[in-house]
Length: 429
RNA sequence: GGGGGGGUUCCAGAGCGGUCAAAUGGGGCAGACUGUAAAUCUGUUGGCUUUCGCCUUCGGAGGUUCGAAUCCUUCCCCCCCCA
Image 1 (cartoon, rainbow, N blue to C red):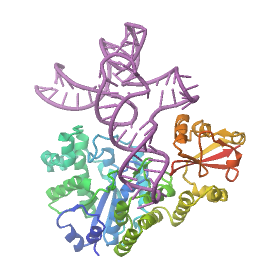
Image 2 (cartoon, chains in turn red, cyan; image 1 turned 90 degrees about the vertical axis):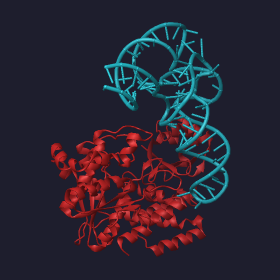
Image 3 (tube, rainbow, N blue to C red; image 1 turned 135 degrees about the vertical axis):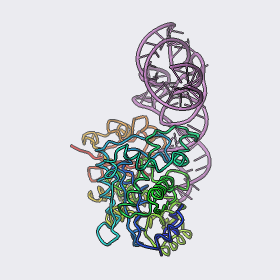
Image 4 (tube, protein in one colour; image 1 turned 180 degrees about the vertical axis):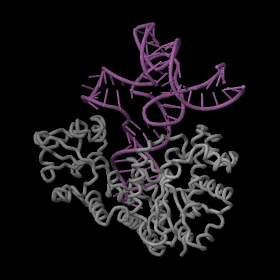
């Protein structure tokens, strides 16, 4: 199966320029996607682009990951209603390095003619003078052409009418120049990205055509959505990051496990490397017994292992079973300390003076007091009234007193708000 | 430079001298139901105390008033139109 066919059945093609498939069949082709270095870790929103590169490489082509050290300093107006904050040069450098390290988990940077490469557009933009850019690049593209792009139109005449700065307006040209540069320096003939990048990518192919007479191509994938219309990759707590410092493997696993049926069916094609047959079989099984959530489990397993590790995956499953399975106070109490800590890795931890527990402390004061497990006593009281608080998996009321009998391993207390929010309280001293 | 419209609690958006911690919708959180789902229904959504009550909040700073988110002064910011 060739690259385009592969992406097609996975539902990863939104649009592509005529001739793209032919180009890919003709020869080993170098293609790139851009990654905005807005943080020092990738999040799962980036994973789609990375998977495109992965499939590209598996099909024998050469992937480039362009880390936008320069474009990141400007900000893409696509999809944004407002101009965004600019990052400092230091932050950008730090982020670029961190992202490089993460990409190495997904792509082969070592072997073969088609080994992956990372490029940073800051390297070639840094010394490009403003005047130079105007003379060499700007004159090839008309303002009329640039204004016709949706990303620009929306900002000028859309309902929001936020206005856009000249800097933002220029973004597509700068990105277009990246493509031109890579075309000339690395024989890169294809740019890929999310469908919101179409306009930016075509500015690049246009620039290449006008300036060199050469032909380059564009391929975009649909924006990942959720069936309920929410934003993909976000939870109440924010982005789902690849870096375990920001999103623990347990939370990461849980995110995928909690996908809706419709989403899981879509995501498993996009984010895993499972074959069409394997996925079809899983979907079939899922239809028979939706409550078993085989699809979600397979999805969560595959991604967790690839992003983290087999061991992290097993730990996450174990934790999930203890927390959501038939876990009771008894099973909690019997858990050895090291297992307990592993299970609750990534769960917020609070330290409290041993004395307070031994003399008994009211639940409201414990949760809403100085520890700030919950924001305030008012909130603690409210949650208690709603029946939303459990201690060691037992629901408790407002007048519950926490004392030494609640301790797990003589040291820990598991507090729970609702079904999914856990807090571990540890005594000290 | 001229003219106009705005800045309200997470967001949108009412309020326009007291009955306003501030309508309504969205979102969030929680409960029931369930598949750790969706849909639905219910409760809740500034802080302290929970009984009355108190404190902080309506762009910033002053002022008028017994009393202001609501009136006045001044400053800051945003948007639109014209030059």
